[in-house]
Amino acid sequence: MRTLLIAATILMSQSAFACWNEVGQKYGISPYLLHAIAKTESGLNPKAINRSNRNGTYDVGLMQINSSWLPTLARHGIKEEHLYEPCVSIEVGAWILAQNIRRLGYSWDAVGAYNSGNPNIGRKYATKVYRNLPPELMARN
Image 1 (cartoon, helix red, strand yellow):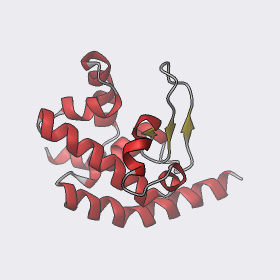
Image 2 (image 1 turned 90 degrees about the horizontal axis):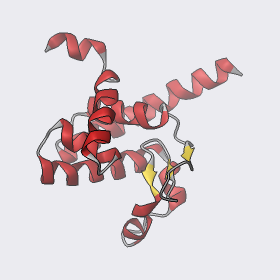
Image 3 (image 1 turned 120 degrees about the vertical axis):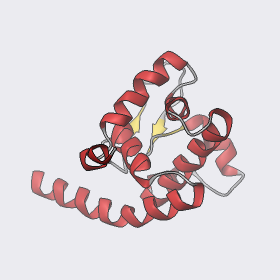
Image 4 (image 1 turned 180 degrees about the vertical axis):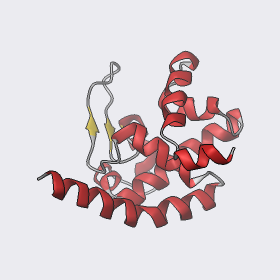
């Protein structure tokens, strides 16, 4: 079972790799950053569901898109079940992050706002994302 899970994760990562690159280019966001957010949010599990939000909302998919976005996404033809598709989740996550970047600049504050409107919680979240960036990327800087 563990081998199957590892193989599925590798295959998902390979198929999503092109999505991270394409979507990153589309929104001007590093694909490494998008990948680090997905790793932080779902552990790279495209079927992840988090129902433990205190405000009654829930998060779904690879990028853990919050259910509060569902009415907005529905206007664009995106339903909840689409968010379990890795490329759709990456696209929506990047779109949300791009809105934060427009508002806050390309910064860790924008990354933190992906997870929480509370700046203190956002800073802690951004630190987790930073730690999920590839070590070889950090060695270059």
